[in-house]
Image (cartoon, rainbow, N blue to C red):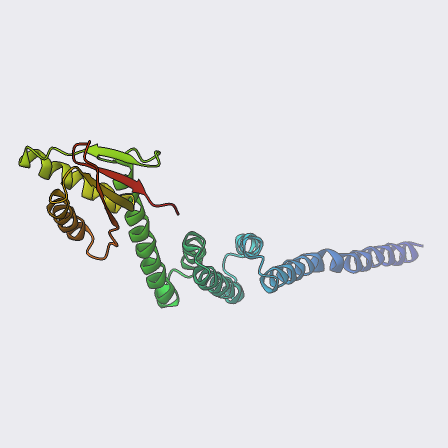
Length: 238
């Protein structure tokens, strides 16, 4: 009887051990399956150029397995994808987007400066060109906003000339020439005497050409006996 009981207990213990062994594998295989799914999702994001999503997915995988060297290939693929994006948007003229993409490529591959060197130089040059263009536009706008003698909103402005005071006349002509160039003005020189026109025209022309040698100065002569010498400045219509 005792022998039978011992055999029965041994059989029960063996059955329990066998059941435990059979139930263990699913739990053990759960982690590899989840990892394989995460890597597949990462590869899909890279293939679809969803780079921000791919970067988040890669970071999650690296946090789970910080010593997994197999993830380095995905990190390099992501860096190269950001670099390619930087090149593409730079060609389209979007310097800011190119710089952002390049910074992500650098962050992902800090030990490979040669990877980003060419694009970086292109961005620097493009940014310099943008800054130069913006500075030129700003200078032009500032110059135009500071009209010296004309009303920029008016169709024309009449300036009475100080022909009896050469010092004041020269200052007037300096200001008139600046507005003529900055606001692309046509000029009508109105004088009571025919002989006054040539020297006034010469004085103004010299000043305009000094400011802009290529400016197409359009002068009109009007002899009006009942007025003092004056110039009428009319900004050209676009």
